[in-house]
Amino acid sequence: RIEKNKKYENNLFFFFITSQGWEEGMIGMKKAGRRLVIIPPNLAYGSKGVPNCVPANSTLIFEAELRRVTSTEQFLSSLHHLLL
Image (tube, rainbow, N blue to C red; front, side, top):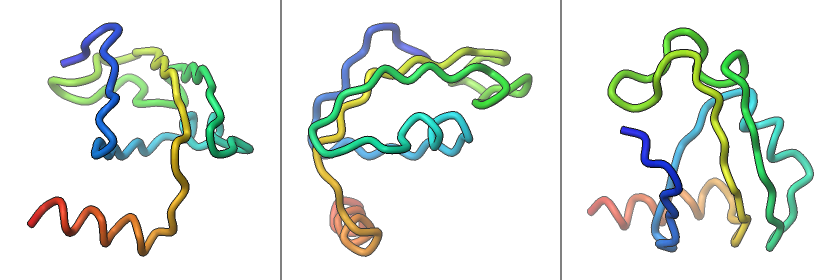
């Protein structure tokens, strides 16, 4: 389900977005940076969407703030501890 204007401010909120548009939108972003990322359907989930989450042909709009940068190992370790 998509919630308009929903803010995720919990420091423990992890998310995985696998789209070309997200990767392109984050290029060059630095710690404490803020950015509006607008991802057209062809660079997001296209005509398939994500069942029960993102409708087909949706433009995705994110207000992103980079609070912390960690290594892959640190991220996976943190995620492992959260899931236990």
